[in-house]
Amino acid sequence: MEITQTQEGTTYHIEIRQPQKGDIIEGKIVQVKPDEIIVDIGTKTEGVIPKSEWSAPFLVDKDKKPEIGDKVKVYVLDVGKGEDGLIKLSRWRAIFEEAWDYIREAKNDDKSIKVKGVKKVKGGLMVDVFGLEGFIPQSHLSLPDKPVSAWKFKGKEMEVKILEAERKRRRIVLSRRSILEEELQKQKEKFFSNLKEGDIVEGKVSGITNFGVFVDLGPVEGLIHLSELSWSRDVQPRDVVKKGQKIKVKVIEVKPEEGKLSLSLKQLQPDPWEKVGEKYKVGEVYEGKITRITDFGVFVELEPGVEGLILLRDLDWENIENPRKIVREGQKIEVKVLSVNQAEKRIRLGRKQLLDPWQDIAEKFKVGDIVKVKVTKLADFGAFVELKPGVEGLVHVSHLAKGRIKHPSECVREGDEIEVKILEVKPEEKRVRLSVRELLLEREREERKKKEEEKKEQEEKLKESMKEILGEEPTVTMGDIMNWKKLHKAR
Image 1: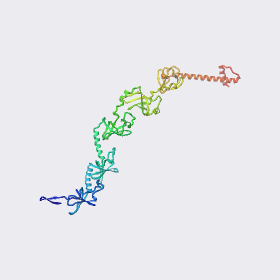
Image 2: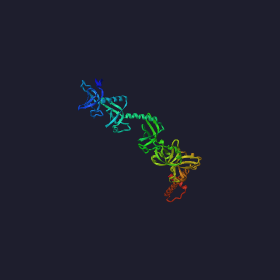
Image 3: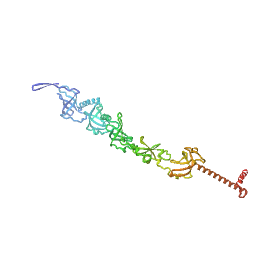
Image 4: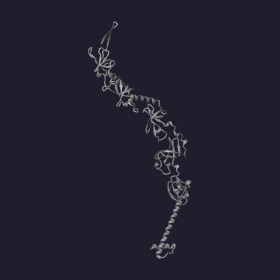
């Protein structure tokens, strides 16, 4: 359309472009009627916005009222015919079309956009997306391990990525988490690029479990395994650190490809084994706490991080198959150091060495008693035998047999069980003298005595028999008795 304008005697011809269907233009509200809004769009013919085209449910300002003088962007729905034909316009379509152009471009190019929090709704947050309502699910408001309330975002701008954009359904689903994850990944890459094993870093205790402690180092969370928490073996994590506590830790393993970090708290403390050789001397007695009981022995903690082992054979003088019958975990006991190997971090301890097996020996073994013993060792001068665990006695070579022998091996071997007679018991000297010879001689004497008693008994019986026959007390000799026996036998 062309209009003619004269100014100071000069005539101007101005070409004004007539709006076309689908155009988005700006106008000014000049009149508000009950069913329509009249808009000046700079053409000879004014535009009209039907009431149904003013707003829509998916607009953020759907409740906005038209006011005379307000500027407004409109979408051309239809161009009227003739000079008096009105141009049909739509406000909500203008907002929608402009916004959707931005949304489509961002979605196709995987770009982020800025939105503003509007209100908290069930399951998430409604936001302003270029004038349209969008939805951020609660799970996409933050990182999984750092949940936040949707209320905190009301009225605040944030950067998001578009997850879904359905034009027909006017549906827009967004994610703030995607942006945070991208930023976190960049921070992680930078963090790992500047980190190496052996570094000392500071962080905050973010979680405590039965297997260790998690430490928040910013973009990365590291783990202090239970074994790296303290030099002490049976330590409870909550006894060492508290949630939220700031601590310094040593990096002992870095796995950037897995995003994993292994840390140590104990390695920032002195290794207690460094001074074990100076502190624990062989033969000395110390107090410790039983930490573990196994089938082969008992572990005793002498100090945090330093444990020694009592082998079963060093636990008691008696043969112990189940150590739990005499000790328990957590029990405090005194132990004797038998050996120390600082290089291999091993200490051998003994409990039985503090127990005196000779203490009640005089009560259990009396002179003259006959006992069964086990031969433990042979020497030129005799055989050592075990009366009870930890107590040995000696059978001198001259007391191993009735006759003379040159060496104990002529009579016994190691491991043999023999019967002996106790000749002497001296607990204060830890000495017991024993004899096989005296036992044999005693048994011979007993056998002779027994035979003599049997013989005497027979004589008495014969006398009684003769008295019955003769009617009087007989005077007989031994020879008479022998003859009488023959006669009695013949009858």
